[in-house]
Each structure stands twice: as structure tokens, then as C-alpha cells.
Amino acid sequence: MPKSFKRRILRDPEIRKRYEALQPKFAIARAIIGKRIEKGLTQSQLAKKIGTKQSAISRLESGNYNPSIHFLEKVAKALNLDLVVSMN
Image (cartoon, rainbow, N blue to C red; front, side, top):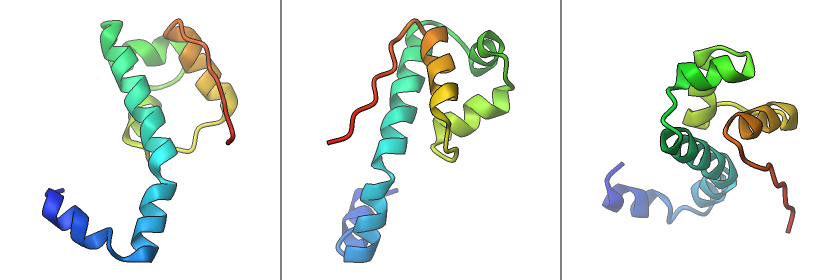
């Protein structure tokens, strides 16, 4: 999305509110993608390690999936990470 377009649409308070609500999902997706790539794993390889399908990893990484804590724990374990949940 071009930056100028993004700035224009985010001026709308309702759109900004919805956009900001999505940030936790995108933060999770960015973290998983980064660690998966850092470990040299494909989506298929990560999926195999946790006993799921590649399409589930794809949905998770796209931000179009609302994962359970259990699923995130499995992903974290497969990537040798600790899952930390915080509410501020």
C-alpha cells in the first residue's frame, strides 16, 4: 500500500481504530516469519515440525488466522522460542 494512501485512509478515526486493532496479529506474524527464516525453515518444514499443514502456517503468517495459545506454543517450541503473553 503506498504510504500516501495509507496516511489518507488512517485519518479516518474508524479506519485508524480498526487498523490499530490488527497490530498484535501483524506483530506475531512478523516475529514468526523472521524467526522461521532465521532458522532456515520453509513454511512446510515448520508445519511438519508441529504436525500441521503448510496452509496453516501461511494463514498464520499472513495475519488472517486467529491462532490459539496452544498453537502458538507449538510454533514457539518448534522455533526454540519461549511464548510470552502480556496484557498492558
